[in-house]
Image (tube, rainbow, N blue to C red):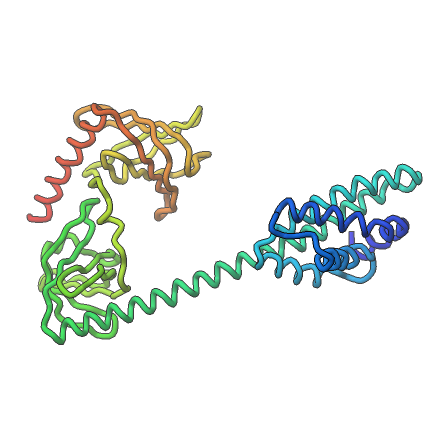
Length: 360
């Protein structure tokens, strides 16, 4: 129903709406001070709430544009306007129903009142959605500015190192779950493209994100491989900027299994199957086609077989993220000593295999 049609029906009870302003202000202030105790009931605030009432319940004209602007302002001031307005309008609806019953009026007007509140709440929701969207855009812009600044500073530092002939660096890259440090040499830098002489070429491929460390580099520099020249043992990377490596704070080594290891994840009566992505003594990453009803924070049971025994352990889902055409689930667990020994033995053995593979 159009807003003007809703207003036309409700104008039949204009006496109610003209007399209700004072009670609306009182109920609104009660909800407001309950939601935000720091807000005091003052004459100025009462006048403002009175204007809100007149805007919404004069039942003439279209107040949606002004309501949207008001809700946007209150959203920026971190005020839960939707909840306060809804609480106040629900009390008003009860009183309106009593008014209809007392005057033996058309009960269809109650539906019109509900429709009116739905319109107003929808406008407020749109304003808050718009505010959140603009907030995300502002955060994204700020992140991009910081990223660009970080990239500029990293490039500037690399140029200075090359000019001073400080070319020795360590390339820190993940290979099958294991981080490998390779002594390397800076060759040249053009714009944001850096060429590096390195070794262990099997580690590198286009799209691989790696990190540069070494003397003269105060914080790791993140870069992405854009070209691999295996014959000349040279990689070309796109410099991205400085980064605080979370891997350096990781207490337990993770490895990628050589062959697929099937895994079952059980939550209550729900069970899904997947493949182990990587594993450590305190967690496992898994690829699954569908996460079902599993969500972050859920307690689950994880079961899989290792060469020296079966593992069945309870844990907490820490993250669920899209990965190519599947989903990746990360589960953290505190295993008993027997299970920890099983996993530790597998991780150490796999580490040795990966190291031999790199050397070969």
